[in-house]
Image 1: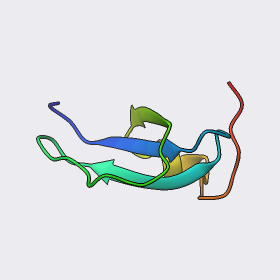
Image 2: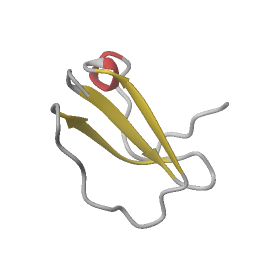
Image 3: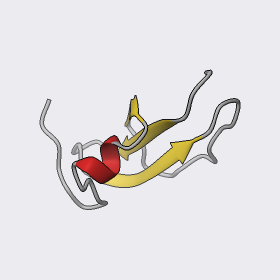
Image 4: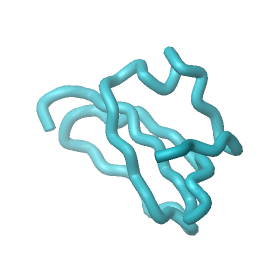
Length: 58
């Protein structure tokens, strides 16, 4: 990837269990219990105040 992104890690119930901002050409350590990963533009997590424990619907 050529630009930073925000990442949300969700469990099987679609609850947020973690978030991260990844810089280009970096990765993230494995998180236990992750079923879904959502990648978004950098700043989206802060803009929508997404925090662990919240449940998403999709």
